[in-house]
Image (cartoon, rainbow over the protein chains, first blue to last red):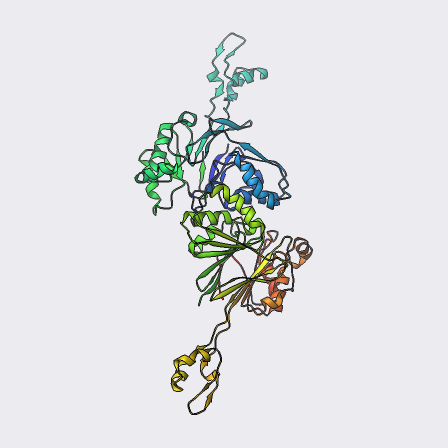
Length: 303
Length: 303
């Protein structure tokens, strides 16, 4: 079952030769979720071999250019490629007006509907759900309203142990109950405990995206035990004052957050271009949380 | 004396892995002119090692996204880099409103002035001039108002032949007249023809940018004998009907235009992604004009 994250852009406000501004694409069981959409996202999608028309949902954390200047290009290209199905964009309420006015000039004949969903800046909210996955937005702590996103697989039922099913000759119409946790009583009155009848389900997977944000533990319970967390790490601890002033985190804080969450793995990015050696940021985060990796453009993480 | 063109983006409406949408940067004696500004232009400028703050003039041919969706990023980045000097943008009159409204939301504290200059869609017009270069816009033939740009070095005066100046002992205050074409009469009454007194000036250089446009000979005299022409070549002759319907040219037409102009060199680009082998377009243009080359991203042409 696919649960894969591809980094499309990992830079902060200023892109570089090798790092586009923030964008990621998450594949959960062949549902493709685009998270933020910095300038050039459509080019990175091509490089990552993502099929454009498989993307039906775009999540924009906040209204800063480095997280959304790729939207006009993506939306226009979808139209040129003949898209017909609606595109859902989850973002600050202002996006509809600001982007709508801009695009209205260029795309008079856009072939598909754009459905804008406004994010709640006050509290967590389930913003998407289907049979496999749900997406929850939650407020971050930035200079402008900003949300993180938690992508959660739906709870997974255990599988039947078919060998046991045969041994105890369990009727077909009873099997659903066993999957849901029931024991089985044989015609002879023997009680077979549920644990003998099923193969335990793997834990449902979770990915949490937190950018841009100052350090905050407010929603740590929500994100708890995530398999993967992306947390911005714009600054080093030595520039903590600047991090605070601009509503960003240090690499150490990103590590601390992952440790407090008991996450399985952390990736960091959104580095300030003031640092010549980005490895310092990774090293700093690792002092708090060893299993930290770096978001590099076009890197891929299987969850 | 530098007169160099760098291709930043060479794709048509749909960028690919290797081709960004249209943008070029022309360096004329260390004046850096940005011509069109497709999405990702700021990233390509970094790759081409162009110093951002040396760009004071941006020329936008027309209001289609693939020629201007890079403007918000470029303008924001200039501001983040501490630009103070005004930025001049030459474009369709609508740009000021459309871009102004969009940017107004993001860049409340932009540090420098943007001076918008409206292009004339009816006739050629000199839109920029300094001591070294002048820029003339001229209407192209597209679905929306669209202009080409001609970049011309100012006429270059011949240099004094210092050996002759010494031989005939020409007074300092007379030398300016000789540079301007005068003969010299010696104290003995001998007339020394101007040609003996100067080293002839090299011809002033010209670069013409024509994209997007259907084939038209209307301004051929203006562009005549250009050292370099960039002419769009979206389609092959076999798709001429489509070229006509969409206001574009075929590769053969681009070659024909260069031949009729008696240009020294032609580069073509803006290929439709319908063609799997772009070499066909180059081959087709060469049937009309042998000295044709292809615009590839980050390729460089010394004029």
